[in-house]
Image: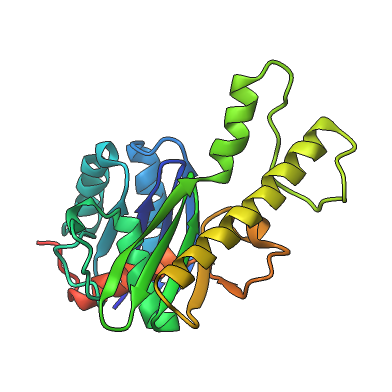
Length: 254
């Protein structure tokens, strides 16, 4: 069953075509999350490839939901399935307040179980970095939230008089030979240390001897490069989770 999958985040929105469990044609809309023309252009472009049977929407930006829901309904002739704890996820949720879990984290949990099994720890590197834990019996039990790489570097730029705004790209030397290089080393090496300590904390606290470690999000590859932990980087994990939830709910949304 083919469907349009949408992941609305704080920094950008990812839109793709789900077809037989594979995600293709992924487009990222940076800003303009409520731009009707941009939404229509992307959706029509994806629909031109194959017959589409519906759509599914995952959002952590409530103010953008109404525009996307209305546009998807207008363009596809039916309302989108909206990911939440109230729909079939393919994974049990034993978190005390499931209504407070971000829809993207639920999609990640659904995808991780399908692709990697349980126990699993999913790290999603976006504006914030989230770590979510799925266990064989309890399913999704909760996780950890920490500042994302953009928040770290943007804060330094905004709150200091002389530090520049840096791009999180490229390799690193042993020591910074410029202010920007020094900041990149601090961000990358420091972030690897934070990731390592959070994973160790979760493994020890939950008495896990092993767990599948998977990562997604725009900064995953850069942040994890050189880390001595066996993370599988899965760029389309969230969109795949959204498509799986669509399938489990038989293209619902009514």
